[in-house]
Amino acid sequence: MLISPAYAQDISGMLGGATQFLPLVLIFGVFYFLLIRPQQQRAKEMKAMLAALKRGDRVVTGGGILGTVQRVAPDKDGKPSPEVEVEIAPNLRVTVMRDTITSVIRPTAANDAMPVKEKAS
Image 1: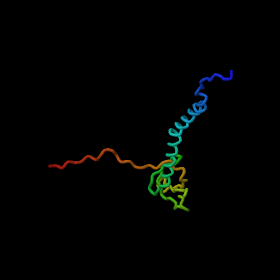
Image 2 (image 1 turned 60 degrees about the horizontal axis):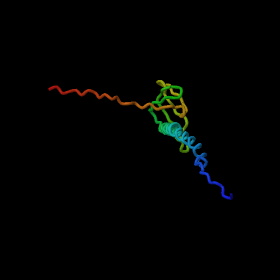
Image 3 (image 1 turned 30 degrees about the vertical axis):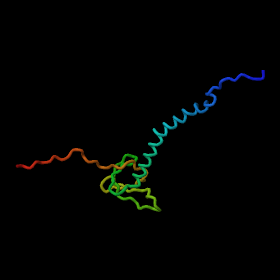
Image 4 (image 1 turned 180 degrees about the vertical axis):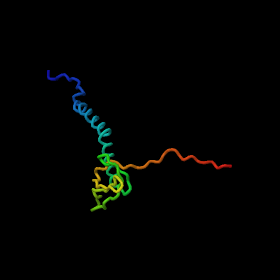
């Protein structure tokens, strides 16, 4: 016979590579949205916080030292100076690198309001 029988083709032969690659793409997507993207956002917030340092801010350094910013060196060539002068005790000032500051402490207002005194009648 000159005619060969035609057998049905298996669809997994055409999609075999794609089905093996799809889980890797999904895992990367999960890692991006759960790990990489939040870390990039935190880094951007930290950079903005360090750029906005001003005199009077209470800061915490990487070593755990609390202090008040006394002097921020002026900008050079559009970039903020890497050094900040911090007062850690009365009349005790140290110069720290801007990158070692881990957080700025903002005072929070108390939730309870002062009681209102009623007028005596």
